[in-house]
Image (cartoon, rainbow, N blue to C red; front, side, top):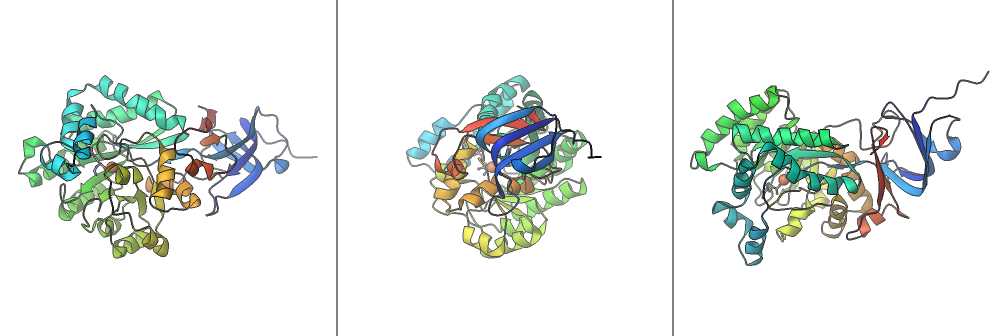
Length: 404
Ligand code: NIG
Ligand code: FE
């Protein structure tokens, strides 16, 4: 007697698959994917698909990738900073604007002034823009509240976005983003407030999946960052870091020493820091939107990352100041054109390595047992995802096995 047919909830076929299982994209031409209970139950060439009686979607020759992962965003905020953009076009620098009380602090004022519903409403169109391109997991940071209540409200807004749309939202507490005006000249006291009040509350309410900090000459010192990281780890929370964006503050090595999930930006990191990250398994999150927007001339040390085998992720850094980027596909192009990443490096950067940057072992790759989060694209070749400067070939998303 032949074995009973496998039970699938749904099958997608007549598609080419970029599984991301290997560094050449793990391509399966004319493949099929089957889902059961939100996970991938079978994947392979269509010719080998077992007999089944599940509903089928004919993908018409589309390409299927793991649902894209945007692993670094500041999506929840009030207002925008187009006026500062104009000041920068007139010659002012990001640092000058920040030191004059603009920058992050101007978004802090607009964020504190917004109520909970307004925060969610303002963020929804930005989230939707990412989803339309095939994003199925997005990380969202706080960092524009800079006081207990407003930081928690930002994180709750991020959770609310995840409840209102078919997407996984992963949150990071970034209360150590800037020193708020109430603590002007008392940076140490603010950091203590973050460590002793904001962090424990965010952890106790289950609002933070990770803890981030801005380690920079205009923000927090390496020692302050280390203090915060130690406290986060005591609460069982993983850490990540905005590192070496404007100056080389040894952020890459610091993140590695704390076993951070990721160190992000890295425009001015040194090779020893990159080597330490590779050894610690800390993912390098590259943010070419910020590089472009700030007309930065230092690029992240990609050669050192390749040499040491440091995994690279790519993300929008969606934020109102340094990267008002609403397209992860555009970041694929910028990763290639600005940073000279290869197409496989860029695509791994928004799938497998982006999952690693968030500590998520159940996605980013198409394989049996992984979450069935898919992005479908009407393209001839995967390289098209990096090639077009604008436009959107996404033909559908699947989240946990369900068309979204
Ligand atoms: O990732 N570098 C610090 N934080 C953000 C920018 C925040 C802002 O300017 O509002 C970033 O680039
Ligand atoms: Fe950022």
